[in-house]
Image 1 (cartoon, one colour):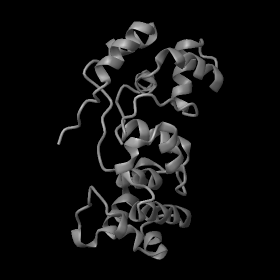
Image 2: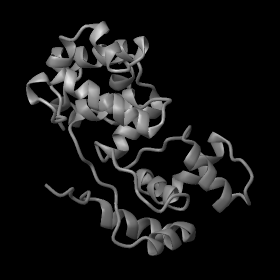
Image 3: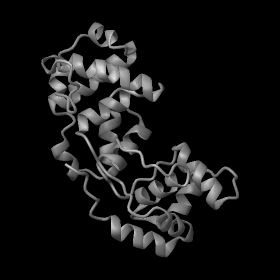
Image 4: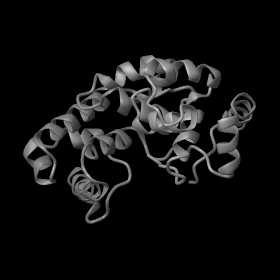
Length: 217
């Protein structure tokens, strides 16, 4: 099924283009592309943990082994959607054989337990504001605020997330708004007031100034 455009996207781009000339140029420079969401919540977060601090190639190799270990009935086919209960039933030793570190194995088991027991229940997330969902996600071992913010932007398609610690956002703002000089989190927050309630969209276009190919999670 093709990914759908967020319901707020057209209103967001129109609003940002009207308020900010830098974003107006970026929006015009990247027609026909937009933020999209793919995958299910558990699989997306598990992939984020597997990929921490390693190359994309290494992460993909380990992910394939892990997905097969979690879904042995699928034979050689890597499942696109993993069952958290199947992951929770795995032993640390089995996860280590996939190439995962001991710490990442613990993180994945903690994540799977949160989903399997309902402590993380996607059905309830619509009742949570952004900070409430971030708080729920960072309660899982191995998920920090940045990972949670990326999840809110790319998977949940939350419209107004501002990832202050994101290096790409910091670089883009320094180049486009501050003559290449580093900007403080306080300065970014002040600048971003004009982007509300579409700070996720503004961030996405600022990333495009560094890499025109959108990332999908």
